[in-house]
Image (cartoon, rainbow, N blue to C red; front, side, top):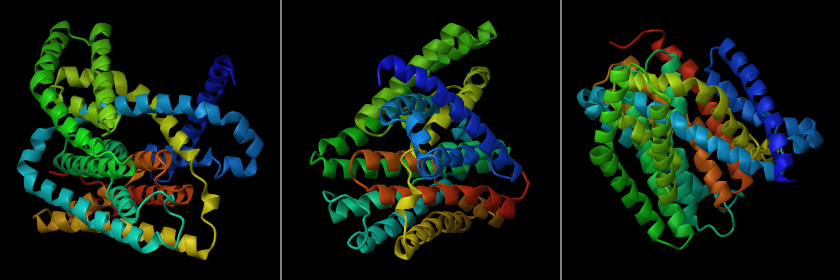
Length: 411
């Protein structure tokens, strides 16, 4: 297809994506699920697992292979801006009084699922088509361990927001633990890619560059952001120039962390955390959040859905493997985090609520799985199994949270 034909098709793709995501999202809300869960399911429905199964010609015509690059690029912009907004809402001051609990939940949420995932890879890989032929056993163990300990960080933020927990101690504690878990998982992924590429500099660049980026944002970027906040408050509004400059910084941060191998969303999130709280932060959130969540973020769900083929999980054995991975994911993440929070002195209800929320994998799981698939680490079969796990654990989050915590707001 020519560039003009791809651009014409893109408009139709966007219309279909937004329409289906809104419909399925509204249905999800009707049954007590967050809008974002419905959008995630909508992405799978538009892929070969549903649309492609019943109307393969239509699905291939609407989403030809050469158009995926455009969807991918747009989805990355949406993810970066959304994670910046999540960072803007993130109030690190609330964590200082709960540092012990946050550390305990984070460590448990990393070690337990990582060990279970690595053990599953060691046991299952010789018998089932989980990894490509060029992946060693150790590399497979590291990748599956990292994929198991990932948390649906952006999705977690949206669930917390929709449940009225933004800015609360419980919500911030859960976000802090989730962000630490995901950062650790990306470092492990960097080691896997370094081994896979036979280049140790990939891991060194990712970890060292990530630390350097945090230092630069903290000591060089923070004064610039404070100056922008003062100008915004003095003007009484967020001007077009301020918004444009802020988006430029977001894209630069996303670009840098993407180049070093940590992934774009963390560069955007760290920059968002550095934004001074107050009028400037609320103005940025008001300008960016709705457009990002309603327009850009659904692109990523559909892009992931296009790579998901439920038909690959056929036969009792592969179905059994999928169920096993799901059980290990729930035990390693949800149960371990809840237990760690309780042992750290958190109340029973809050501990169970933290476990229910941390168990969701959603968006970040899809990101790490897409990287594994694109880099030739995992097979489409394991990709689909893990997508099923991500969908189910994310579907579990809201009902479990409602069951153990109800509509209570934390003190």
